[in-house]
Length: 118
Image (cartoon, rainbow, N blue to C red; front, side, top):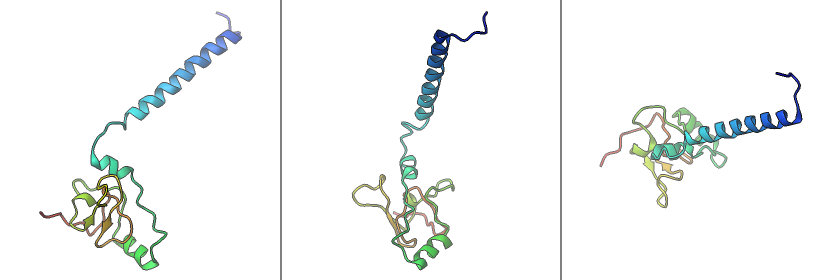
């Protein structure tokens, strides 16, 4: 076989590489599609804008270790007594908290988490 790269070989190889790259991207995207849980939707939200908060409010948020995505199994803002979801769209938008100031992600967590009661 010849080591010479012809225009035809170059175009064929380029087509193969392009197909592999596009296919890999499509497969990677499929890994997150259709997961279908509210927690997945909630963690995709970004409720970290603190520009409207005072320094004291920002400090409270930091002190309570608020995070936008809970890492504690079974504990997130959705099932916390302090969380107040957005009335219009409870799972797809940021809510409020009675303890932590600012926008709160339904999938978030902080040290003030308390199990929601009926």
